[in-house]
Image (cartoon, rainbow, N blue to C red; front, side, top):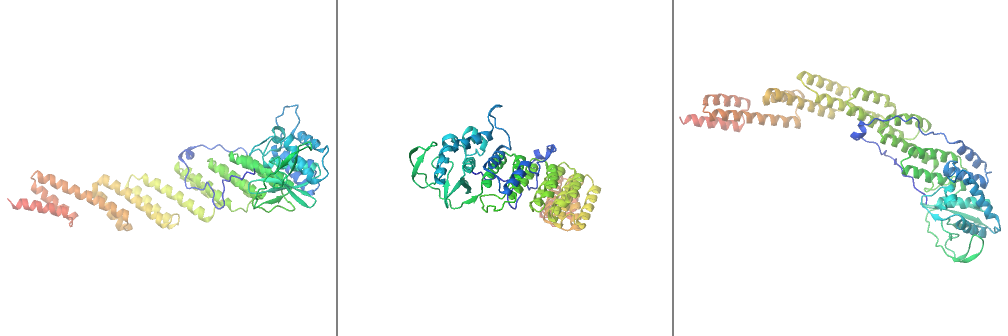
Amino acid sequence: MVFPFRRLYQKGTLLLLAVSVSPLLAQSRQAPVRSFPSLDPEGQALAFNRLAQSGNYTWKDLADIALWSSQAGERLGMGPDGPSARELLLQAAQGLQAGFPENPKEGGARLLAYIHGQYLKSYAPHQTLLDTLLVTGRYNCVSSAVFYAILAASAGLEVQGVITRDHAFVSLHAGGEAVDVETTNAYGYDPGNRREFQNAFGKTTGFTYVPARNYRDRAAISALELVSLILSNRIAEAESQRRYAGALTLAVNRDALLAGRREAVSSPFFRDPRADLLDRIFNYTASLIQAGAEQDALAWMDIAQARYPEDPRWEEAAHSAVNNLLVKLLRSQRYGEARTVLAQNARRLTEQARRELEIQTVDAEFLFRAGKITSPQGAEQLLGDLETALASGQLPKNRGEALRTFILLKEGERAAESGGFAGGIRYLEGAIARYGANIRMEEALRVYQANRIAELHNRFAGLFNQRDYAGARRLILAALEEFPENRRLQSDLQTLERTLGGR
């Protein structure tokens, strides 16, 4: 089968774009990447492309391209004295020649019987490599279709590939007629028609009938495009194993191999090689960010974006990398470094993204400083700095007001700890007079007032119970000067007066 690419990147959203990273990730030390995947294709990819562009390549050239696509030219493990995969393929073509029919339709049927009789042993959905097929007999739709196409070309038959949403096969051209060949099935020649079946040696063994698949959408592809599906499937396999650098290298070579095709296939099932390459570039970028290697990701972006500058996803990737790097620095309270990183990478970001990250950085530093307030002088200094940040536009008004409230409440707590609830009340009343009221400030003031009233009541009750009525009277009158409308304190005074009046 043809594997779809498993993409980290989806159109419009970068997976790693976030406002935070995990604590474990934030504390990890990232090892720098020694080298990045090359965006330059292998020489063989360029040479094969030139050969394809010339239109003069032979079936042996197609075989070489398929074997290179399978293992990048590596010899399969058959022992030092065993034949190479190429030698096995040449032997397969030679074994086909004896008594091969002149009629193309008969030859196509004979070829399918030959490869299933001699080479194809077991279907394996993920086995897309031609050299592995030759050695083990394991195959899928891509490797078997490529094998059939190469041997067909060696016998003078004209075939082309066919791709659907999740399948690949070949179509044989015979006397103006196109015959489908399902290469994964020994009886898959011209599916849907009952016919005599011949074995690999031309002997009739009975009748066969393979139901034709109902492909609503299919696209014809060239033999070279069919071979390129080997690379496509290797890319998908590499990404499924999180080998994003390897997938990118394969995509670079596939893009070079298919560059400048005269009649490129137009089908949603055959991914454009340049679009695939760009997706692999961004998946590799995302993998670096996901691994916590944001600095490496940014260095890689400088290389890749210079080669492919127009893609709008660069802004998303940069935002994600810079954001996650800033989060690490801010959590480590390295605010100066955070500002430096933001300034150095401002060119990568949209104005909106830069503004968001600047606010995030300034906000984090103010929160940290607010938590360290130890004196009224420190609070005043911080409040002054906050007003400067608001005036210069470093913080939006609503966030600045929230930070101011946070600072004032923190200082109100300090004032209450050092001067009692009365001290907290005085501070908050002064803050409200200075900056205006809001729900949080008013609620805090009400709490302090309630605690102060309870405190005065309890002191009054202590004096009253000790029958120190003069002291109780002085206290309650002073308390009513602070809270003249409070009913509890008024009730305390009335209780005292009733007691004294009864004497």
